[in-house]
Length: 338
Ligand SMILES: O=P(O)(O)OC[C@H]1O[C@](O)(COP(=O)(O)O)[C@@H](O)[C@@H]1O
Ligand SMILES: [Mg+2]
Ligand SMILES: [Mg+2]
Image (cartoon, rainbow, N blue to C red; front, side, top):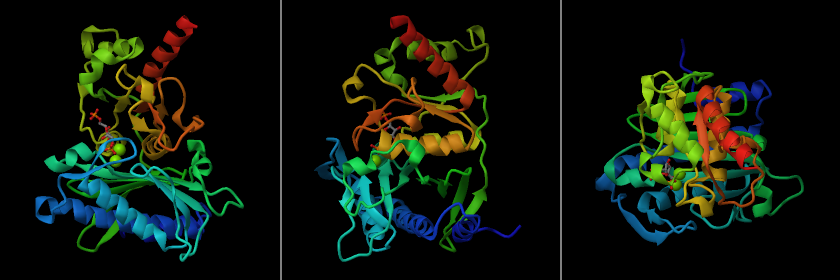
């Protein structure tokens, strides 16, 4: 079969009336920027891109040089295209408006420019995560409140994994599709259409070092998985944790599994570890479109009403059956307390 490039795929989506020209251009621009980030990440020590930038981001986290470089690449690429009203990034306190000298569009772009920063210096897969919203009608200078739309309102979401291969996984709300970067030709090529995450799994991903800080329902759920064949679940489970959300989610999108970043006593005051607007919402959209589920342990992530641009939430996502069991345990515990 003839390979389908990302551009051809976008043309198909436009013909089918699923996206408009502006959204198609936006995705092309983001994909092009991610190709530049792939080049930057692949330079490693030779490109002088490893190590700390010497600055902190809005979250108070030490920025890596590649966090800053990736953020700048995405901002610069998106400034001139005429497809955006504004951008918001995990690395910046406030939304970035499109400069007046450039034409403006009707979309809002949110991104985690480099996910898995702690893995950059040890040559483990990192990625970019993005989400696209519509700018409310009549708003010419979008403010924070215009970005605070529930995940159900996303027009598109995607991530790029900079791993052994560079992959783009994308949804417009009509299935989840994967594109592989053909480095020789320089373009993304469709490698899997309509990905389906198996409903059942025997593989989970969680940072076990936080176990003693988890809430009782999480202790119960993981305890049962660890008990294996002899426990109430009656089967052995395997564990994986890359500590780059993109890589952990991509494994789930590829062969099933379930990912948890639950609430724990250390991060309770912040609301969770992962960011709703840049990580949880786009990943929840992608996973649901592939037949999986995504909750906070209590509610469906996509239905949360955001309260802040940098809001953090607990994240349970992946194979439906396991997300449902873990979520049920949390709801049951809550019902007993009420
Ligand atoms: O270091 P921990 O607790 O294992 O956390 C890993 C998680 O933190 C993150 O790295 C946060 O992302 P950033 O690198 O964008 O800050 C996720 O990708 C990952 O799931
Ligand atoms: Mg991240
Ligand atoms: Mg990041």
